[in-house]
Image (cartoon, rainbow, N blue to C red; front, side):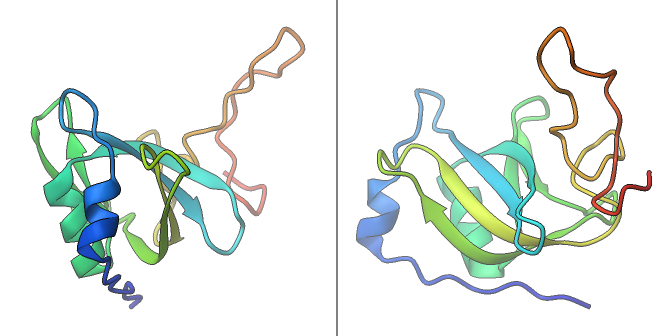
Amino acid sequence: MPTGVRIDATPEQLDAVKYDASGLVPAIAQDIATKDVLMMAWMNAETLRMTLEEGRMVYWSRSRQEVWRKGDTSGDRQFVREGNYDCDADVLLFLVEQEGNGACHTGAYSCFFTRLGADAAAPAAVSPSGAN
C-alpha cells in the first residue's frame, strides 16, 4: 500500500500562500509518473496543513462545506510526493501517486479529458494506458 511523503513546510512558506476572499487556494494534482494533470480542487489553510502532515491529498469541498480526503469513498487516493506553489503563491501544485482508477469523480483517470475547439472529438474518459 502506498504512503505519502510528509512535507515540512516552513512557517514563512505557509504564510506566503495567498488565499482568496473565501479562504481558499486552488490545488492542482499531477501524476508523478505520467505528468498528466489529474484534477484541480480547493484547499484552505487547514487542509493544506493536513495534506503536508499526512502525505495524502486533503481538499476542501465547497459544495459540502467540509474537509474531503481524496479517495475516502472512492478508494482513488492520492499520495503526496512533492509540493510546490507558483511565483505568486496563489496556486498549489502537488505531484502525487494516484491509487485506484483515477482522479475524476466521473471515473476517468483525469478530470481534463474534454478538449476545447470546433475540431475537438467528443469527450472520452481514457486512462493513461488508453483503456477505459
